[in-house]
Every structure is written in C-alpha cells, then in structure tokens.
Amino acid sequence: MSSMEKSELFKAVGKRIKELREAKGLTQVDLAGKMEGEFDTTNVSRIEAGRTNPTLYNLYRIAVALEVDLEELVRVF
Amino acid sequence: MSSMEKSELFKAVGKRIKELREAKGLTQVDLAGKMEGEFDTTNVSRIEAGRTNPTLYNLYRIAVALEVDLEELVRVF
Image (cartoon, rainbow over all chains, first blue to last red; front, side, top):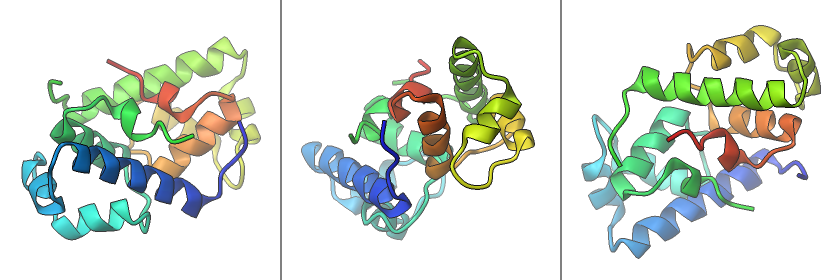
C-alpha cells in the first residue's frame, strides 16, 4: 500500500464524507446538527475541504450521523 | 448503527491494531520503528490500550506500517 501525502489523505477522506453526506441529501448544516454533542458547521466544511487532521472520535461521530460504518469514511483508495 | 461510548471506540480500535500487529509478528517497538516519521513506542501502546483519541494521519501511518488498508483498522463492530 503506497504511502499517501498527508494533504492527499485529508482531501480524499473529506471528499468521501461530502459524497456520503450529499447522497443522503444533507447540507453541512444538517450534518452538524445531527452530530452527537457539540460540532460546528465550520468543522464539517474544514474536514470536507481536507484542511484538518480529524480525530477518530470526530470521524466516528460523522459516521453515526451519516448512518454509515466508520470504515466507509476512510475507504478512499 | 448504535453510538458507541468514546472509550469503547478507542479500546475497540486499539484492540484491532494490536491484533493486526501481532498477526504480523511485530512487537510495539517494531511497529513504531516501521512508522513513517517520528512515532514513539509509548504512542503505540497508548493507542492499543485505547487511552488516546488518535488522529486520521496517525491511524493512516499505522495502517501503512502494518501493510493493511486504513479501513481494516476501524472495522471494529
């Protein structure tokens, strides 16, 4: 498995989350609202733009809100 | 998909990483040594013990070092 640049990885996972969100007909605001606990819409947009290194727990919360398994979020190559 | 407690999630992913590492016959020191860039053995042991909230990039580096796809690390339920 070739090693991906950091920014490539963040962009790929961000793009994946955006695809899954849009497939569910949700806006970023909708997704932030469905998240367990505090999660700002700007967090959603930064993660989708690949501009941040999300933690396992935040990825998990996004997966729960999107009603998909966590592994789906990181199935990017 | 039921929502898991934070500590449950970290322990489940930690346990998964330990299983994959041991299946490859690697010690924690071996794994830390195979990681791209700086990564301390104590980081490996804290992640495997579920005592930390690892970032996407650290999970990815572990997956590369274990020669498995990233989604394998988080396939925990």
